[in-house]
Amino acid sequence: MTTPESRITAWLATQQEAMLAELEAMVNIDGGSYDKAGVDAVGQRVKEFCARFDIPVETIPGEKHGDCLRALVGGEDGAGASGNARTNIVLMGHRDTVFPKGEPERRPFRIENGIATGPGVCDMKAGLVQNLFVLAAFRQFGGAPGPLVGLFTGDEEIGSPEGRPVIEAEARRARVVFNSEPGRPTGAVVTGRKGGVFMVMDITGKAAHSGGNFEAGISAIEELARKIQAIHALTDIPRGITLNVGLVSGGQSVNTVAPWAQGQIDLRYIHPEDRDDIMARIEAIIAQSFVPGTRATLTIRGEFLPLARNPGTEAVFAAYQAAAAESGFATMGEFAGGCADSGFTAALGAPTLCAVGPVGGKAHSPEEYLEVASFVPRAQALARAILKLDAAGI
Image (tube, rainbow, N blue to C red):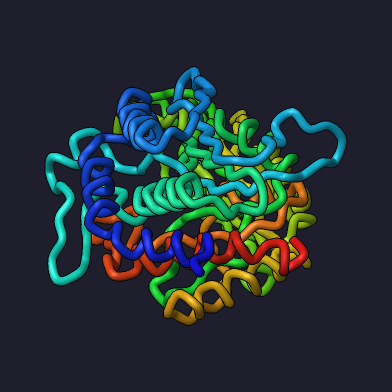
């Protein structure tokens, strides 16, 4: 006698070539975060795939960035639920990449010795493909213990400025969230992540000739340098707090006292309560003029919340770990310094597991790679984990 699990996992076992074909098509489409047309072109692939399996897809338009897509398989959708009702099983992923226009032309998708490469191949187009095939499997063979929602967003790499409200709305009705960011090179999934705040400080000084009228000038670049030193001094490695000014610009010419300067700040932290403390210290540094006469402003351009472990996370991880063993591989839980949309869902109480996608590494670089042999087992593990939710009490 066959079961939904046996039918689902057997079908997934036959789908590696189809998965790779879909992945190739997605990787070879431009899709940087600020390329709305490109991200939406990847979204069109998602829609076409879902249409082949009669999976309805709702489009939540993005004004500046890629649309959010919401695919639904089976059950009584909790989208209209009131109060604290949480029914939906959410498979989440983002379609945007960090790469500039034309990157797929320069280095298109390829496979060599079991390793796939190309822009966004593991971060995270492979995760999108995995989610699509898991949705299709449940659509064909049933067995899901609740409504399955595939959420495909378009701006994660820049902090989800438009995607975050959609993600948070989904989290409020989510029974559980699986975020298919790439599995770690060790094969582990991610059970905790840092939060991050991405900021810009703009400094105004006063221009003057650096030889003939030096005293009349007020150097914004000197002020920037002093602020950078003060901001970097806030780093506290034992607490998991790091500050990095990663981009600087400014000045008018080499023989002009700099009338303006800019620095872009990356803050990472582990504990939610540390965020406000460090931000208050940064704001005090911005408000202080180390060089008299300078003025500065601080703008937050993007922010991620930490993925904090909780009892729900532990239960989901235990279910996934058992599902992985049944799918032929062992996995552990890792903490990651990088940020992801999973922090938003966890912060709203949805039990969340991250990095359940196929295994890969070196994301955001020309050496980004995907282990092809991990595609099917990771898809099977995700499906099995979903089938274990009732027994796990999730």
